[in-house]
Image (spheres, rainbow, N blue to C red):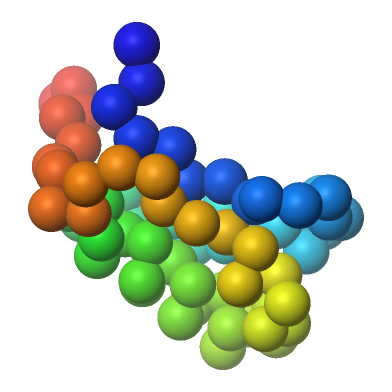
Length: 74
């Protein structure tokens, strides 16, 4: 089962959500960031600098422990 969820809490447009998704995947697979709280914060900052609106950023929330670490296969 899931131990955390990082998702929008409202309806939105896929194109606007993509900025956060792309930033999140880049952090996980290219920059090797594993702490959930850091992933959430950095992906939102990156999306904001790419032009994502405050409304989009505010709808994405982390449900889970921000100190948890992802385990990613090598």
